Image (cartoon, rainbow, N blue to C red; front, side):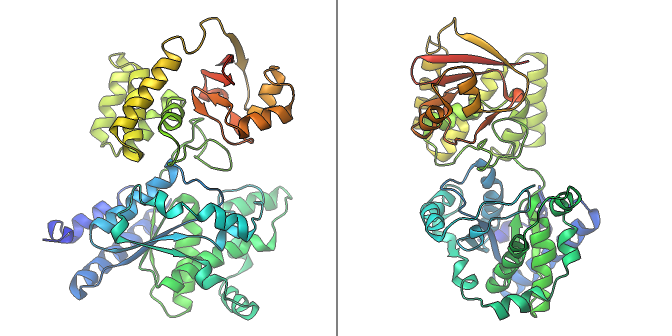
Length: 415
């Protein structure tokens, strides 16, 4: 008996649309009904749906936030559908401007190839290796010529792009919007065309690219428009506030060593724990309600809840033994005199770059020294290694212990 034989069509729709949100009830219902019809036809014809999600190798690491869409792909996969893990080797040359308030730095092809080397292996932490198709979008995008771009671009108006929230904000503020940034949605739309996609999965920042651009271009080129499954919630980063992002340095890489992964999870503010339990561990509303009630009445200490969270996350991406050892390492460093009892306390009233903070507190000789220490793994926050020289520390992520080398510590508190 196959996975699809175990669930009715309506049960499959409920499962696959779980967590999806569009900011508009009508759009959500349209996507729901289109998905239902596709599933009915797939069952009748014996043809699995073609489903994909794209991941741009802007850096070498995927992070926990990416696993939200990966888990949705896995649901399609477990129901017997054809899943593609698309690596954006061409789109990442520009970088998606969807959730950015400024122009992204453009990467070189060499940097992209370097970053993409381990992306598939990282994806297999969630996806079934034997059922996953891995593709690279330079396969079809690199071959387009100028005439092709004009032909594709003729299906859209400038007004459609300027109506996007991030572009509109920049336009209203008098900030530059470069022409090449508009090409990104066009390229992603062509990804759907090239793969003749039935369903594309993405986050909230991909709503325009998937539901507007992708569907419109498919229709214009004679294809049936894809169903967009847009995940409604984003995972906050280690600051507990802003969406987890590699460029902001508040991410937890899924390939991080067990000790670093455990320490980074332990640095997440208490208030963000429920959404981590929900999005990463898949807890039900009932389980989350019980967790929040126990935290509120004091029967469960936040530190114990967070240690469980860290232990289970490390187990998912490594194994139970690695999680146990990482927890022991954390306890040894931070609960058994790993951090001196008499360290200085610094009050933080606003978000500050780690490099600037280290220099201001005279924990390093210079900002250049701070950058070198970070690049060499010599700076930690609550035991988690800081690996981005642009990383910031926000007051809402405190309290936390900032460590430089083996002997310099400061306890950061929210002012």
